[in-house]
Image (cartoon, rainbow, N blue to C red):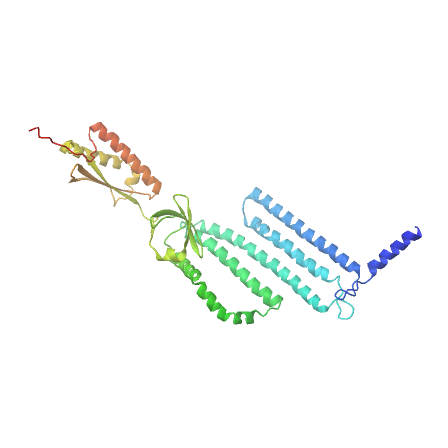
Length: 379
């Protein structure tokens, strides 16, 4: 080895072993920070690789066996795992640095470092609990799927959101007060007067919350129910803490505050036991007694052949020749459709109308429409 190369190597080694003389990091050799940096990069890589393998394994198991609690559990822990590994790396890296009041870094920084590492570990733990709410939701959906009522289906997303909000609030208070040393009690006490102002400003939000409590307690509707709200017909899609989302028959999504839903008249079309049709069939006056009687018999025969019209024994179809109108003979027709399917009701109405037109035409019975007869005196 040449003298020049040996000199360069000696200089590099002496630089590597030399302490860095900045005031805040004095007393620590350069290799300490180099090793700290390398370990931190390795820890971050391990966290990302572990997250990747956990997610891939969970996805593969899901494709093979379908959704189950184990797959959801693993998928929930993937991202918190990488954060937890990073927290572990911070604890490890702290051991490479020398802390001393005289010859090293200020020990106060060691305390801050340790608190930050603990806070990151607490965040990883909280994030894992936050994500594991999906497992609870999975079991709740299985449980509610066994019941006939859909009210349970509305409660599942509300329970999920409530649990997650509670977890976040508890975690923030725990990390701020228990780990970082913030005086949360003093902050909360000093915010008492401001809390009154916030409560007054948030009165609509509070009203909506109690509106949602009223909806869940009274159960006026469920998911997928058809409602008549004002002049609009809409299907319920979601009920939350603040608002209810409904989809109109035109496809528009309406978000209605729960305070309004609890205080206005809402007609639940889906909760009726049947759907009733009342109609007046008018035929011409020249039909006479025979054809009027025949028209009643035809309508009765049509309705008797439809099972959904005769499904309610206490509500049989009604057909009567009930009135003499100004321009027609009036036949009253009323029937009830069960099950109360909105679109089945329209299909049955169409079937009755078409059969009525066909049979009336075969019997020579004419439907009446407004007409005027003008008599001219030739004298």
